[in-house]
Length: 307
Ligand SMILES: [Zn+2]
Image 1 (cartoon, rainbow, N blue to C red):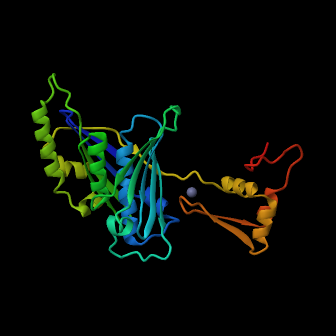
Image 2 (image 1 turned 90 degrees about the horizontal axis):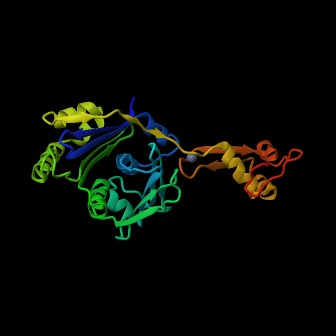
């Protein structure tokens, strides 16, 4: 069982190679979310891409990839923090049929107004930094193509991505050409360009099934066995949504006793789904009553927290 990101570097420092593979984390992510196969596949590709791209961000915070669709899918959101905690969700537009062979274009860009929004949110220690947002047209047949274009046009980084997912796994491979260092014992710009072309050709032989089936080291060895590579320690990835029963309780407290009692007059219990991970929370009449019991010396704040 692996939920890992692995980094490799060509020993001439010309090209970065990264792989990601999720098994258990993907199952955790899908535990409360059920989508048609083509939607799930798209979500998995976006998950793989977000981990591969986040791993090179230099600040504390998160990368958020959002696909804002005009077709059967209204929104896909994937958030990956710089310590590789990931969560993701899909909003299906009501009343739209999802084609069984749905693609990025037929699910999200049927009228040509779909948008791909990339947000870099430095919410960690450097909170004085402002979030950066890039909006890119959804041009391309796949998540990989749209992101390759974004990286080239906005980040000036030649990047190639191979992404795959099925019900069991998420997997991805990234190649990125690093800026030529120049003027030292390393490779010349021409040599670096040659290397970039060569590794791109090698990776383009990769089959979707291979990407899903092979562990990272086997995959990289099979593709780049002739290249001199440096290998780094793997980094673990976890699926994590910060929702909790306490947070939902706080939300109900903020709604107020009257409102909650009103809802309960029509049903036995209140069912709430986390709108990010889909995890269900249930509060029956007894649970709800206990939310509004004020202990001596304590007052309820408007956000439901106790003081
Ligand atoms: Zn959640």
